[in-house]
Image 1 (tube, one colour):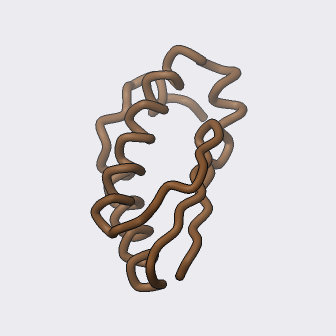
Image 2 (cartoon, one colour; image 1 turned 90 degrees about the vertical axis):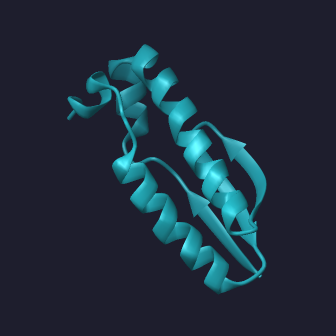
Length: 86
């Protein structure tokens, strides 16, 4: 088994700067996370804010998830307000 913990780096600053844009971004982020988790047979243990705790049957599935979710997040259609934040 493998456990994966995720968290959006610097999200507190982003929430303080533009909570409305972050609300929209969080929906997209969570959709991508859950879609990739399901694709690699993961299980969502708990979610708090933008942090996910996930479990996978083995390390290979966890690694495949990590690579796919990074690529998917990078290519996601983030709103301009999020992209312009420092």
